[in-house]
Length: 281
Image 1 (cartoon, helix red, strand yellow):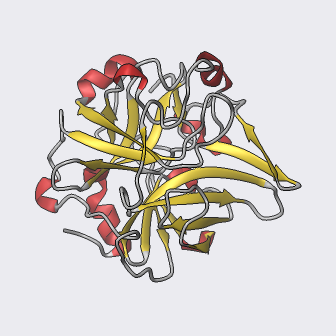
Image 2: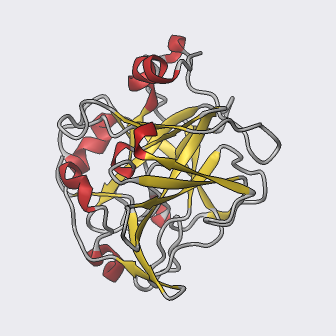
């Protein structure tokens, strides 16, 4: 896979101010850099960029999404990502979001980092796929959390059933949400969502070269896409909602230039999720 960048933003906080880092291009196999491409920001500087060209979510639109503040001990650098509630004690996210010491998980709000409540979870409760990052398509991880009671604003989303494990969902419509970076150098404070159509890997390979089955791509017409800071967030089908993707990567050319957005394919990892969390359908 060539010309890809992870969908994660890094920030540094000091004296109650926030500066956003967007300075490093990365290959998918160099995910530890956790930075957004400066070239992408430059090319998008004339656009009002959130989860690009999406729409603001209403309260309860995506009760399954959580905001992740990804932190390292003795550092003021914070990476921004997302995750998905799949059970009372489990959040599913991208493996590249779980390379630091702890995360603050914010539940039940459209405001980034300001949920109804949050849990601080340390790395001994992180489970990254054992093949990541050595094998493409395994950018997936689990966070074991304290018990969460479900309400209208905090709730799980179902995984695909094992009977759907060979379903590619090609041409299905799905929604993805996040608090990704804007072209002006700031993150979206309010949760943004965008409706996108899943494409076949043969079509996606025209942009990125050979892809493993563990990758799922969506078309990004009219500048609608995921962007930096959306890493780990959900891709959920419109009909009979199920979680089919975990936000993973995009093009180094920029978020709004029409290249496919890449996700980890959930159906390729149903056994792994069941083996580590006990959750299966």
